[in-house]
Structures are given as structure tokens and as C-alpha cells.
Image (cartoon, rainbow, N blue to C red; front, side):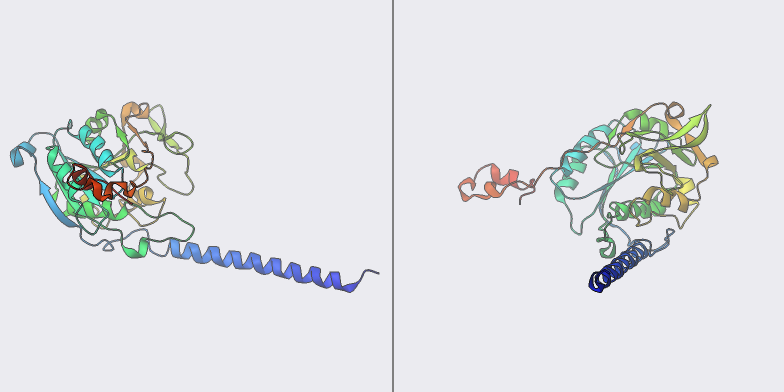
Amino acid sequence: MRPSQPLGLLTVMKKVQVLAVLLGVVVLVVYFMLLFSGPVTTTTSTAFPVVVTSWLGEYGVEGMQSDLPTLYVITPTYRRPEQIPELTRLGQTLMHVPKLHWLVADDATSVNQQVVDYLKSIGIPFTYFLTPMPQKYSRRWFGYLPKGVANRNGAMMWLRLRATEGVMYMADDDNTYDLRIFQEIRHTKKVSMFPVGLVTHTGLSTPVLRDGRWVGWFDGWISDRVFPVDMAGFAVSIPFFLSVPEAEMPYIAGYEETGFLNNLHVTIDDIEFLADNCTKIYVWHTHTQKSKASSREILDKKYDGTNLRQLQEVMVVN
């Protein structure tokens, strides 16, 4: 006969395992309740963006008046060592696009004068906003932050008050754009979609077409998303956007694009498939290698009175 003590110990261990599993289930339930605590369709959750400065370009209002629909390019940004280099790369592209208004939304509570000075230097119409992420969305258990949502919603709120025609496009500052993408989206009637390269492990995010008809999606993470597309993979006409006053982007990481398109009540029949029936790539989801903040060596007093003091002002120093 086996001694009773090991059997009792085994029973206790099984109970502990069951309790551990139950605790894990409770933690997951609480996490997802917090993650999806708000409805995907939101209306007034976004504080009005603080418009710091706006400029209509070298030729003013007259320069914006032509037969072309206006392209409103929304770019969320935030302070980091790569911020100005990436805005510079994107800005040098946008300089070649006619009838464009660049909406740069900064996740900040105070003005980044370096960004404003750069926007003024390139000579294209722009509006610079302060659109900090609401504090309640700044932390997530086990998950990702809904980065850029406050920025994009702030810019879209500005569009609701100022725009009546044209097309809006979400252009992150770390992507790479062929000028042809701006030519293609300019005459979007409701929603246009097209491929984006270098996305997830599949290297591509795109609608799937057969004989010019939509049959599905190709993306590294489809999950339960109705529209599993990249942020750079669609454009929306201003009149269509204005026709749904309550539509904005939800603060749910990973569901920003599909949530916004769902809130616009988009159907497949509303979508125009561009880039030669989605056979060409004109935008890539590139990433600049993250740089560490510069060392404090430049702060040494021996450099007082030299050009390093001026250069220090445009650096991110530890």
C-alpha cells in the first residue's frame, strides 16, 4: 500500500493548478474588458486640437484655387531623434504634389518649434496641431498603445470644420511614397484602396482581386478585422467623410483602420481599387532604425561659445 501523504500532496498540487488556470482566465477577461471597454464608434471623445499655426503657402488662397481637388495629407508625429529627418523625407516628397495641404498633428502638449520652422521652410500649405494622446489611453496591460489616434482624430475634426471638397490620406512620417500614389487617390469618390509594401511578415497588405473583382484580403494579420488594411493603404473623399458626422478612429490598438472604416459604414461596393487593379506598389511601410538620444558630451562647458550650442538646440539629448 502506498503512503497517503504523497496522494494528499498530489491532490493539493492539482487544486493549485486549477486555481492558477482560473486566475489566468480572470486576468485575461479583465484585460479584454479594459481593452474593449468603449464602443468602437465614438463621437465626442476627442478633445478639439490646438491649432498652433497654419499657412497657405507661397501663393496663398490663389495658389490653392485650381481645378484639382485638394489633397489633405494627415501626418501624426511625436518628438524623437528621427522626427525631423523623417518629416524632411516626407516633406521633400510632398513638395512635388500640387494642391496639397499638409496636416501635421504632434503628440505633444507644447510646441516643437523645430517642426514648425521646418514646415515653414518647405513652402507648402500646412497646419500644425497639438494633439496629445488622452491620459486614459496612454497605458495598456499586455497590449500596444493606440498610437497616432488622437493625432488623426484631431486633424479630422479640423477637416470637418474647414473642408468641403477633396480627399484625405493618412501618411505616416516613417513611410516611403511614390508620387504616383497622390495622383491616383486625388479623384477618390468615396474610398480608394491599394497595396502597401513591407507590411508584417508577409511583406504586403492589399485587397485581393480576380478579374478586377474583390475576393478577399492579403495581410499578415487578418484576424476578425472587417477591413484588414494598412493605414497607408486607403484614402477617403471629404464629401463621403462629412456625410457620416460621427465617424472617427477608435482607440483600440490594431483596430484603428478597420474601426474607422466601419464607423464610416463602408461597404465593398464603395471601394475603388487603384494602382492598376492593385498590381503595383506605390507606398511602403518602411521603418527608420531607432536612434538613441545623444550623449551629454555636447553639454560640456568647454564647448560654450561654439557652434555646438546652436546644434544642441535641434538635438534630442539624454
